[in-house]
Length: 168
Image 1 (cartoon, rainbow, N blue to C red):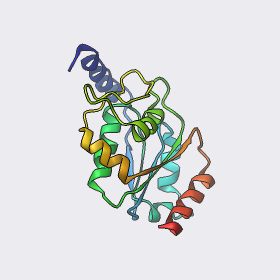
Image 2 (cartoon, rainbow, N blue to C red):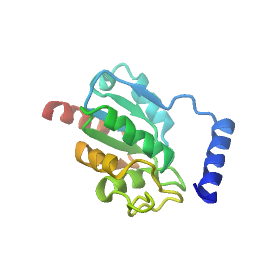
Image 3 (cartoon, one colour):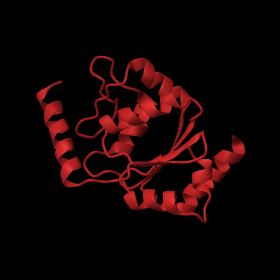
Image 4 (cartoon, rainbow, N blue to C red):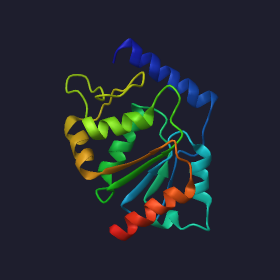
């Protein structure tokens, strides 16, 4: 681990302490769809707590993604532990400065460099993953990504979930 990565890790720990965000994710009752709300914590809460919609009955998980490295590593590892997870809806506000949604789209489209784990095409400040090349390739084959970055419209998200549930 180089100095820049060590400083990034330290800054991340400092942020966790100074700006604690209690809810990172909520599990649903489905098995093939995940929703990633990026930095839109209010959207995350709305999806998780809206009983009038049955989104939580149809999705495996809804969660946030705040970093283009550790957070994305966790998302990929979670996906691989759930082989029935085939659809990831990426929505909500992009993380300012980190571009986590853009990094997720890039790793899915382009993969990572073999020599250093850098996400090919990612523009965030530290887009380096620790997942193996084999895990990245499996993630890319296993999932389809639905790019709604910037969209916080619950009806649009619900429509995609409904369409995916019908199509299998």
